[in-house]
Length: 103
Length: 103
Length: 103
Length: 103
Image 1 (cartoon, each protein chain N blue to C red):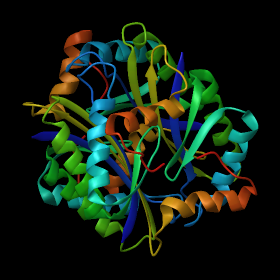
Image 2 (image 1 turned 180 degrees about the vertical axis):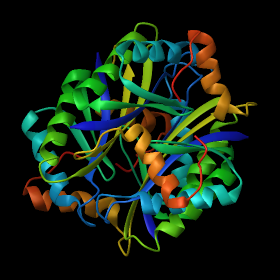
Image 3 (image 1 turned 180 degrees about the horizontal axis):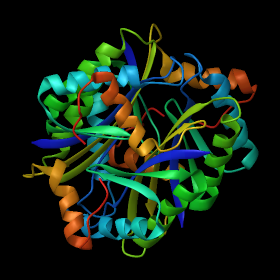
């Protein structure tokens, strides 16, 4: 049962810039080998529930070493029998509108 | 490392009313014995990351038996060394404003 | 067209505690006279789209006076022809499970 | 005061596929001329609070013509004095990791 999971995870006690912390999460995601797409407001993973949640947990564990307050926003979209949706959801919109969208 | 986790989980392919499905999740939450508070837009759990995420997973597994498309919105708030926050976060606001808030 | 809107709004550049800032938002909500319920992870408002979004905007404007980085998570649930849902959504679950839920 | 706003907006009472409805929102976004990026789990807009929220409202108004239950998830990230963040947030991560990320 493959799902799409988008998450944003950041320390809220460390000053204005978060990129140093987010970079460590991206490193973990890349090292995991999971399918992902990074956007300006979150990163989307595709895989089994336990697999994608496991990656989020690893990022959280890493971040909790250097921050005392952390916030996570997570969205999951499950559709039975579908995979490859990191790409296909946007393609389906382009087909419907007949135009390219900005990605 | 105790966290607060709020989630809403619902099928998006079954018509207007979702309460039949949400009721099954609440049953799972109550049976789990975990600390929780239900609100009009989501239910908040308090516990270790794996414990609260485990309950969300159980609710998802149950729902996927009767729905082909499911959406979850999850928020996590971690604060080092704090627990009992299901209650204390609101109390802290009441102390600051000097007034009772609607809960 | 009445909606339920849950939001959490907090500065992410001011250290661990956020309650001083959240208290100002609750003050604004109470002064607005809008129907609301505060929970441990967000506050839910009920009203017309422009009305509830107007309150969120006021809270944001206030917060931006004392913080340089602010995060908001907002969820909206619209159901045609329904109101009073701050209360009725939970009652409907209690009816379905035959048990009181923790609120 | 420019913000980044990511949103996902979908009917929850119309069956498994949502792309027909999402396509109408993308059309509204493109016609508005606002800066945006579409991702697999939401679309991010950049602009003044009233401007980006106005676009979300237009999408909601359009969707409510053909659906009786609609859900929206919205995230806002404000950082004082910064703009062009649709692009710069990801570039900043690439600089920190020294590697290209998937977008």
